[in-house]
Image (cartoon, rainbow, N blue to C red):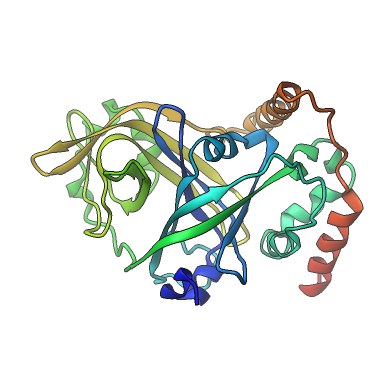
Amino acid sequence: MTILDEAPLDVLDAYRTCEFATLGRDGTPAAWPTAVRRKTDGTLLLTTSLAFAQKALNIRRDGRVALLFSDPTGSGSTEAPQIFVGGRAECPEEIRTGPEGAEDYWRMLFERQPHSRSYVSAPARWTMDWYYLRLLITVTPEQVAVRPPLGAPPSPGTRAHGVSSRLTGAAQLAAYASAVLAARDESGAPVLARVRPVATDTGYALRVPADCAAVPGPASLLVHRHDHQMNHMHNALVRGHMKESDDGLLLVPDKVVEPMGSGRASDALGLLRRTKRATDRYLERRGLPRPKVRWEEFRRLADAARRADGH
């Protein structure tokens, strides 16, 4: 019996992604979508490539993390309950160049994300080695909360049209029916909640669930999407400071981060350049040579997934 048994595990396992929050150096909680594999010992396994190692660096400085399973796209259920998990994470320095220690995780990815199978063959592997140089993150859950789905969006008239366009992040948030708030509780630990931001003259008004202990302080709003095969992804983070208002909480935005670009055709090339530079920088700062990916081991798992679905 583990604390995760308080949640509907079949629902948790069916989610293709979750929102995963760590604490930045300045204390700002930031969430990004990521794939998760539940282990038999009650812990959760995530990974991050060297190109997006910030979450690993955050964990090594402060292991308090939060996960929210709230976007059921691809899970087979449009009415799945949301599952919040708070806990502590560890991320060793060891760089994994093959699937060892995370075989089930990689099998899951290749099964659920068919297009990723092509990355292990030429010519894609010539530009995708950064994707397979991974750090493993293990989360030990300490608290679990199950919440109902957010439900249907309100009528368009509830959004402050004309005001939203003047706020930082308005264009990104307007493309989504909801967002995920990453904030802190009284102890400073990250908390997450799916919300519907409403634009005001000075920021985004937020209403959080009763079991979300968010308090004023640095915070962010994440929007993201993927299709049923974990393709056509986009994500954006609106960072800012949250304060109390007459109607609840108000996030005053100051910055937008879009690591994968905004969807333009040129973004893919820019992303490859950034990932290569970020990977090189991670290795150079540690005086490490660039490891060689064990392609054939990944290819065997990808081929097995292809045979399993008849492709």
